[in-house]
Image (cartoon, rainbow, N blue to C red; front, side, top):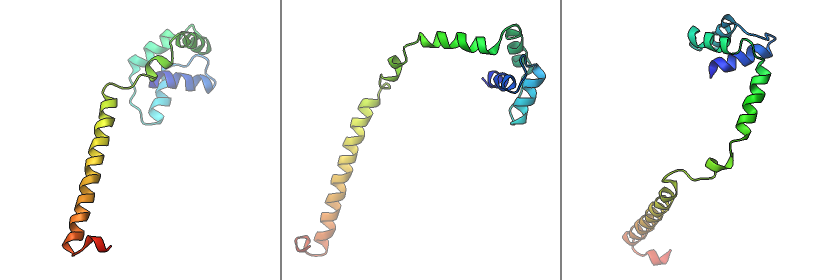
Length: 113
């Protein structure tokens, strides 16, 4: 993904068709590791294409995917975990209340408070 981002940055910087060297300068300038083979594959794939056309094509493909299908479904096991957490919290609260009552009894008269 860093190569695609670097390619897009190079285009935004004025290079209509960035080279491998352009991508290397961008990626290494932020401390990223550079693999010339990955960069070369991307540059060759986009050599005769406009990045703007590629993005438009990707947008049309992404718009066909239903956005709410997976986002609205709860993660596996998340609902039971929440119920279990509530039970644990209630038990802890009850235990704390009992400890306070015992402490008050030790000092002779929790009813006087």
